[in-house]
Amino acid sequence: MDLTTEFKIIRLADDTFKEEEDQVVKEFPLKIIVNDEEVVTLACSPHYLDELAAGYLYSEGFIEDKSQILQITLVEDAVTVELSEMTKGMGELPHRIITSGCGRSTVYTDLYGTGLVKVRSEVQVIHQRILQLSSELNNLSKLFKETGGVHNTLLGDCQGEFLIFREDIGRHNAVDKLVGHLVLNDLTADDKILVTTGRISAEMLLKTVRRQIPILVSRSAPTDMAIQLAYRLGVTLIGFARGRRMNIYTHGERVI
Image: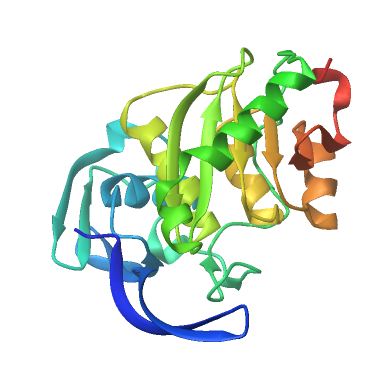
């Protein structure tokens, strides 16, 4: 499925109006249906939709691992997921929370991280490797360069090499796609670094904790709640990682 659409626009540059063709990023409404019951509709970029569904269900606590997924089927605007069992059933959902995400994101997780296991990884990384990954993230997205309309995220190692890259119109979706890739391929990330272009809010931090990723980096800012959660749950939280600078907010012992 195409990720962009062409529109005719009038562009103003240097006090001159000019008619041009412009690439605009697509926004796709995706229904996630679990065992014949619709869970949510996500506004997203229309690729890696199986990963998005798996990552969303994992991040929201519906599943714990790949073994619970029997089948994932994409039909038109819906991903149907058949589960052998649900860690958290529909009747056990807490109240919905409207988050700070673009488009008034809805989550079902406890934003205080109750029940999540603290990240205890002793991994360390040289600070230049973090800046290297942040720079690489900025260079990888052809879609962002064409449209300026997506968030990017990558998973890297402590040698500064990127392993997985995903992009989406939503910063939460971009992370869920990456997490979904980990889930569907039974990959661990307890010695890895997650780098994103988006603001780090509480729910973004909790996605990281749930997959036990020890270092979370953004080219943007964190919120105060994200910082408090990162401190309590053992995540090294870094913001404004651009060029030769960054702010380390919590657990700086992992950065050398």
